[in-house]
Length: 210
Image 1 (tube, rainbow, N blue to C red):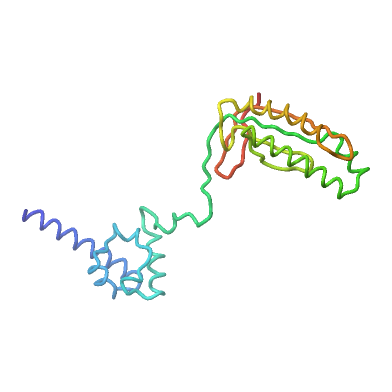
Image 2: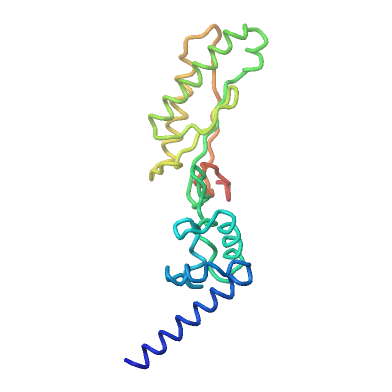
C-alpha cells in the first residue's frame, strides 16, 4: 500500500510538472496552481475545450486552446462536433427500381397551346403521376418539366418494388390518356432495376443496370 501511494504521488507530481512546463512555454505559468487544484493533467487537457469555469481570461483561453490542438493524441471534442443541421454522409448499397415518365409530344403541345393552358396540363399530369406513384409505394425524386423521376425501393424498400413499378407504369398510361384536356395526352414510361449506392442525403449512384 505504501509503495502504491508513493508511485501515485510520483505520477501526480510528474503530471503537474508537465502541465507547468506547457504553461511556462506558453508564457502563462501563473495558472499552474489553478490546474493543479482542478486535477487537470495532460490526459484531461485534450478534452478541455472551455477554461472559463476555472477563471482563465478570454485571451489566455484562446492561447490554451491553440496549445491543446498542438498536443499529440486525441483532438479536442469541439473539433469533432458536427454542425447543427448538417447531415452526416452515410451510404448503403441496395436494390432500386427507377421509373421515368414524360408526356408524348410535349414540344408540339407547347407550340400550339397558350402557356397558361400548358402549365395547367402539366400540373394535372404531375399530380396524376404523384398520386399513382404514392399509391404503389414509390417516391417522386424529381420533376423535370414534363418528365418525372421516380424511385421504387428508396427511401422505403419492399420485396416487390420492381413489380410495383411495372404496375404503377401500366396504370399511369391509362390514367394520363383519360385526363380531361384540350388535347389528347399520352405518356411514355421507362423502368430499370439495379444496385445503387444510396446516401443519407437522398442521392443515388448507380452501380449496375439490369
